[in-house]
Amino acid sequence: MACENPLRDLSPLSGLPNPEAEFLTPGPIGVFDSGYGGLTILRDMIRRMPEYDYLYLGDNARAPYGTRSFDVIYDFTRQSVEELFKRGCNLVILACNTASAKALRSIQQLVLPGKYPGRRVLGVIRPTIESLASISASGHVGLLATQGTVRSHSYQLELAKTSPSMKITETECPMFVPLVEANEFSSPGADYFVKKYLSSALESDPLIDTLVLGCTHYPLLLPKILQYAPEHIRVMTQGGIVANSLADYLTRHPEIERVCTRGSSRTFLTTESSEKFNRLATLFLEGAAEVESSRITL
Image (tube, rainbow, N blue to C red):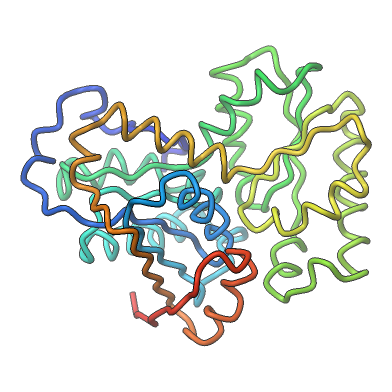
């Protein structure tokens, strides 16, 4: 299964006129994540473009995705994308690094052309990679991510395409997502794992001057990461980068922008308990929105 990951269109229709979009019924922008972390991406999208309607789907019942196989992640992601399509979305953002790494390219090339030719699915890794060249002075970057993202080497492959002279050191952080979803990201136990993973990355490459938080859960650990990271290291989160990249995409693709409705609504779906989702979602949205979710079955 192909592994690709940009917030851009890589389907066979990429770069060509998209007449199918003219016949689509306008609907919200879909945002998908395996759990709660994608809400940090949605939060910045809302801040950047509050006028649009957004429909968020968290596959919380089957999370985490990070340790699952390519085929399983592809199947889960495809099912979730198709659910968002059924609910009126014409554009879906995979606000999940693991899904972007392991499922995006296959969905773009194998699913969209035959079944949904006018619709688009975009990921989060490419815009993050494209921002590195202007941020890192040493050309040495560290990636903190899930097992699935690290073992896909998607960041490494993308960096080789855009900035082959740069080096990226990938570090698995298997305890970060459980800490965040257990609401323990500010606990003393989190200090141990933050120090452990930072030490591992910097021991592998002491020249690192930029750290990428390659999972949308990780911004909640940012205060502790900043506490223990050397002062000269810049730490990148993805929300603002992805939001700006999406705004640019909509400007460059007016045929898609026209079928994104503008009513400033926010709707949340989860495959698990809606009560649990509502409780935890406020952590990721930082109280920016009152969350009322609905439980669905995929």
